[in-house]
Length: 193
Image (cartoon, rainbow, N blue to C red; front, side, top):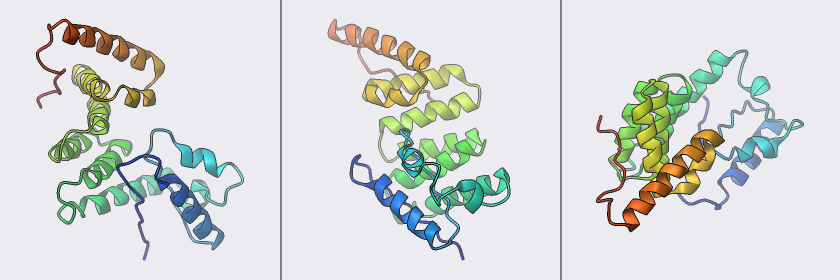
């Protein structure tokens, strides 16, 4: 029976990628089938593994992209099954939502990102809400969610393409000027639906 192991922590720099890469490499060296999913926008795990790594998704996942997508969705569904055991923790919701987003189901992703918001707002939830809205071709809602994410944490916008990031940073600078001048009563809102 396959095992799914999630290495997660809200804090950066605690060794999540290091542990994940080492475990994946160890198991691959033991001839076990390994799928390493790096959900970090930096994508360090893929860079660290390199071309000579025994962790090769084409070799260890199966014959086609359909198998990979099913495995990614299985990881998400497993994460979602832990939400009652981890009340108030957004990570299971975010992992589940992300699995639907990358497998081409943005509406389901949006629903689960909204559930993650119920645990408290975080810029990475807002960012991924924006991605889900974009997947639904709801550009205004996507822009609002991305603006809100960047308002909370401008650094998170580094995961976006430069033209999008630059446009959002200009809007954030304008809003910051409005705030300092007393013309802004509230932060930019998230889409209401």
